[in-house]
Each structure stands twice: as structure tokens, then as C-alpha cells.
Length: 230
Image (cartoon, rainbow, N blue to C red):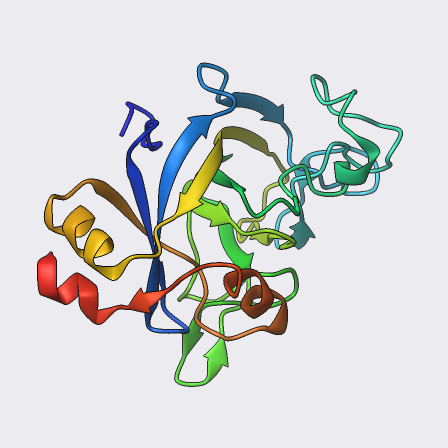
């Protein structure tokens, strides 16, 4: 891995798929944006009616990482020339030979966040109850790391539980990988045994047709393979 936590060329990513009790292993063949991983995104793409990026006390808002704030014409600085196909979600893609590895840093750190994977599908549960933005479980604060699968819109819900209106700020680091799926189980076992792979868990506990379709593009192995070698 590099100093940001991304996988270097020639090395491997092991993705744990909890809902399937399986893993998928990918070799990173190319880092298409190496050296240019940071996006100083600025305020979250939300509005309180008068001020973009401000989250009022006691309220929540749902959002995706799009190329604009309140209207498509209001492009975020540095994202003005994004292909129109991706303005509603800058990490959405269809090419199964690539992958986005994303790290978010949401400020202020006391804001409570949940992830929907895919959009509108909460992925944290407690005894049959899905996490909500105001839950005391299944939430994250500040930093969040995840992999985007093809044709998946990832969505977030951010909640300000204080009585103060706060200006939000988002910094993004991302790696755009060109990947090759490891399909041979013996090779997968050897990669894991030699500790050549970064291991990351997909935020996927509750099965969803869209995610299942994306996962069907890849060769999977039983999660027991990790127990054998790690």
C-alpha cells in the first residue's frame, strides 16, 4: 500500500462480501490517477434553503458525491468539466475492468453519518432493525473508506444532533484502479498466505439486486479461505 492506504500497481485487494460470506481478490494493474488522489470537495452537496453546505441543528440530509451542490448548473470548483453522464455521482461507472477506492473525511467530526449501499438501502442492522441517521449504532464519524462497484450509486445521510447550524466540509481521496480479478483459488490462497493483499470489507450486509448483479461479474471464493491462511 502507499501512504494513503491505496493499493500499488501489481499488488492485490481482497474484498470481503459479508452478505455472501465470500471474498473477491483483484490485482491492481494500473493507478489511473496516481499522484492526483485528493479532491478538495468543499461543503457537502446539501442546502438549508439559503446556504449551501450548511446543516441546521437537529436536521439530517441525504446526499451523493455529485459534481454540483443544489442545481446541476452550480458545478463544484474543479469538477466543471465532468462528463454529463457522471454529474449526479462522480464515482458511478459501468466498466468492470476498473474500480474506485474512495476515502472520505467529513467535517465537523461530530456529524453522524450512515451509508446506503446502493442508494436508499441501509447496510447496518441490529436485530432486524436498519440503522437510521439518528441511530446509536451503524453510524460513522469523520473518516470512511469503501470500494465502489460498477453501476452502484453510493449514498450517505448526515445528521447534526446539536442545536447549532454548522458549515460542513468534505475532503476526498480516491484511487481509480484498472483491475484483474483473480480466478484461480490456489493463486488466491497464495496471495493471502504471503499477505500481499489489502483486506477491505464491502458495506454490504443486506442483499440487494443491484449489488448482486455487480458482484456476478467477478469470481468469488468462500470466506473460509481467509481463515485457512490469515
